[in-house]
Length: 200
Image 1 (cartoon, rainbow, N blue to C red):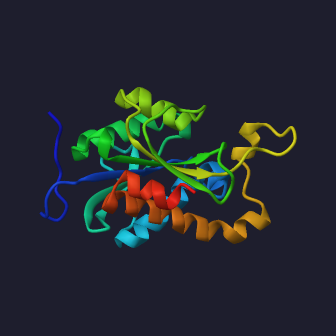
Image 2 (image 1 turned 90 degrees about the horizontal axis):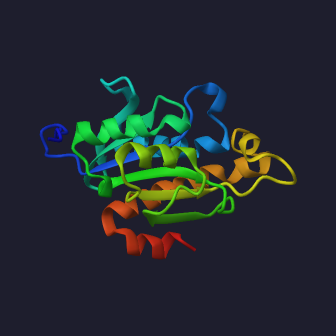
């Protein structure tokens, strides 16, 4: 039986929102960590600060987003081990996969663009693969934050673990805020309307 948790005695958590990335200062400014950046913006909007979850596997912020009770999560494991912490949080807070939103970097979308979707494959993303394997389904919401493809012959591995260019860094804060807006839209008006506004 899944355990339900209450936020300030106001009822059950309705959403779990997870930003994907790698822990530690070495990776903080890399493209692979854009999910963490968006989660930080959402934490600020929720008026909370990151605290280590009792499982020791993730950091969480409990609060309200767009009027809904929500938990924000960031794995304390590396990207390819994201699934265990996400599964732990889903179980602990009694949230179904249908109410899980995962924010992640996406190579096949240009920098500055977003896509919102429900379900689908992993598209080579190790964080998504780990989550799908751990929770037994891919039917969760994704906020796909475009980072584009590596230039020339640069490897994908090197590209995603490099910081943004100086030009990209100028636009990144606006882009991250827009991704946070997409999360709140998904919570308030649902998938179809959010896709109509942000999947352009």
